[in-house]
Image (tube, rainbow, N blue to C red; front, side, top):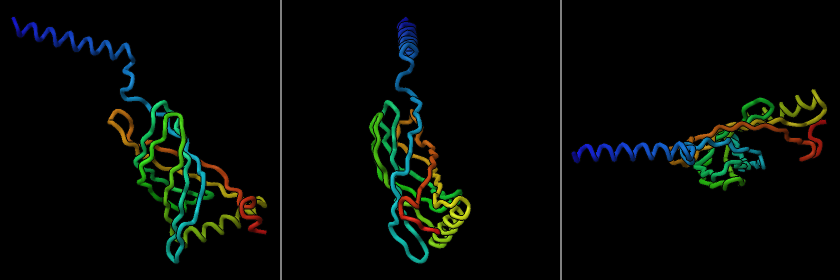
Length: 174
């Protein structure tokens, strides 16, 4: 008789928990995250030697979610005018508040030969074609999140834009 009472009590508890989860819409469980907007906020040549160039990318991360995003790191690739020029990672933890934004620095690495030849070739080609020295960039990669196991641990991103070199550095190619 006691066994039957325990079994029935456990069954009632399971059903009650199930109904509470259904009524609340499982709030907080497995929340789907909206991918944050990533913008290129700055680019700095950090080191340059005969074989390698190190660039520091400053990325603006905009969190449109109702919960904070705790970033463990970011991996990314930079393309200029559809040519891959640099790739890198950042392991600096950052918390982006709910409905907020912050900047994250990422070191990216490129072969000196790759970046120099690609850069000048791209500028010359664009100047010959359009008379302007704008570069298009594409930044893609993954944000690595600190999670509880109920949300994704990585979120892909892809963003693009133009860098108007003429406005930034004066007329480069005539």
